[in-house]
Length: 163
Picture 1: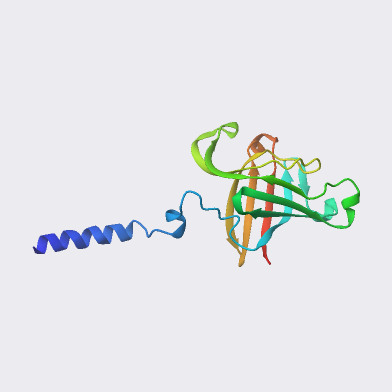
Picture 2: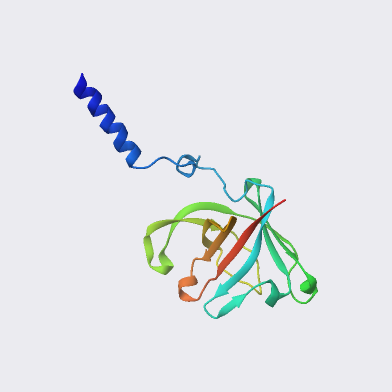
């Protein structure tokens, strides 16, 4: 009996040592971490191998508003909207896991977000990887175009603004 209790205690200890399960590990398959709160993702900058663009270089701000049912609003606001930028754009998006064969990482699976923007000034791939980070008390969203490794996509950064 003592051996059985010792074995059970060792098993429980090894399970705890292997790591606790976080909320992210037990989320349902349809969980959408981008559309949970009331607010939007405010654009910080878009980087290309050839340079970087941000609200000060473009004359307007961009916001991503992820909604229920895979709906995305790309909102643009600012003084220079009338000088060649595009109006608000509504589209759908899809979250998934997948590989990036264009960048030679076809073995590892990444979180993928897929959507089109019809952007003329700030183009990126429709298929992108994304990650959420917590930095200096602020939540950030990093989006990387599928072909950014070969100068065919962009690196986008946003921060969360609660409403």
